[in-house]
Length: 435
Image 1: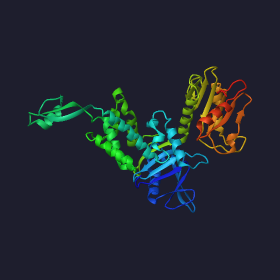
Image 2: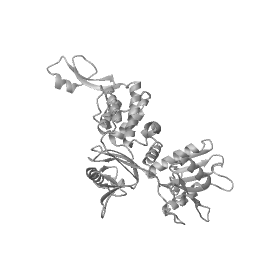
Image 3: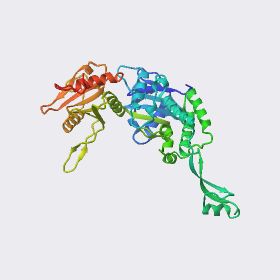
Image 4: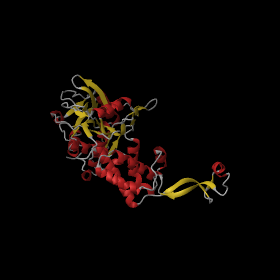
C-alpha cells in the first residue's frame, strides 16, 4: 500500500476524532470532520444517517457509530473506511472480511461472482483494493481477447461525400467552401461506449487506489485503451451498452464500471466529501448467504428452495391484498411438505421465555406457518458464544402452530445449517434431512 490510510471497524463500532480512546477507532480530525459532513449533508437514495449515527459523549466528544451497513467508503482525499460484519466473540478482521466477500458473492447480479479469495489474499488486502483487483482481472481478460469494435456516429466536414448530408451544418460551414460536404456517417472502430466506460473507470481508479501493484496494472491497461476516448457522459454510454453475444466478455467489467463510476450499490449517496461508497445492509446479505448455502446443501432432486416466495396473500377476498413474502420456503418433493424460514440479523437475549424475539416477528411466522400449511416455521439468527445457541427454542400453540429459533455459525455455516435443519424440523415420522 502507498500512504493512503485505511481505517477498519465492524458494525456498531465507533470512531472518535484525533485521540486514542479505548474501544473506539481513531480517525484523523480532518477525516472525521469530512465523514461527519457527509453524513449530515449527503444527498441520494436515503438518509445517510441510516449508515452511521453522529452523537456526543461526555469525556469522549463526538462519536460516529456504524450501524448495520457494511462495505467501504472512499473519502475525497483517498482515505478508506471499511465497515465489516461483526462476528460475535471474534475480533479477527480477516475472518470478517472473508465472510463479507462470501456474502457479496451470493447476491443475484453483482460483479462479485468472480471472487477468488485464495488468490486475492483477502485477509490482508482492504476491500476497496480487492474490488479494484477484480476489475483489473476482468479488463485484462478483455485485453487478452482483443478490444471489441463497434459503429459510432461521426460528423465531419470533408472534401469527399460520405454518409448523410446535414443541411443545417452544410449551410453554416460551407456557404463559401462548396467543394466540402458536412455529413454524418458510421465509423467502425474501438471507440465504443463499453470501452469508453472502462477507460473512464481506469482513470478514476488510478487516482483513488492506494496499492502500488493495482496502480501499476491500471497504468498498463490505460496504455491499451490509449486510442479510446474516456466517457464524458456515463449514463448515456451505459444506455448504449449491449448484451449481444460478442460482448459477453465485457459483462462483468461493465458491472464494475457501474459500481465505481456511479456508486451503484444498495445505497446511492452523493456528496463532496465522499468519492465512492459501496454499502449493503447486513440483513440482506445474511439472507442471501443463507439461501445460497441451503441451495448447495439440499439436493435439487429432493428439495425445492424458494427465496422471497410470493404465492400467497394475507387476504384473498374481496381482492387479494397484503402479499406474504417469507425469506425461504423449502418444499420436500417426495411428500410435498413445506418448511418456512426467515433470517434475522440480530442477537437474541439469554432470557426465557421469549429470548428477546420480537412480537412482530412471531406474528409474521405464525401467519407463514398457517398460510403455507408448513410443518413448522423457523427463525434463523447468527450464532453467538452464549449457551442460548445450544438450546432447543421452540414455541407451540394449541392450534398446531410451531415456531422454532435456530442459529448459524458464521465461521462454519455448512455444519451448523445441517445441524439446524435436522434438529429444528425433526418430527416423529420424518425429518427434513436424513440423519
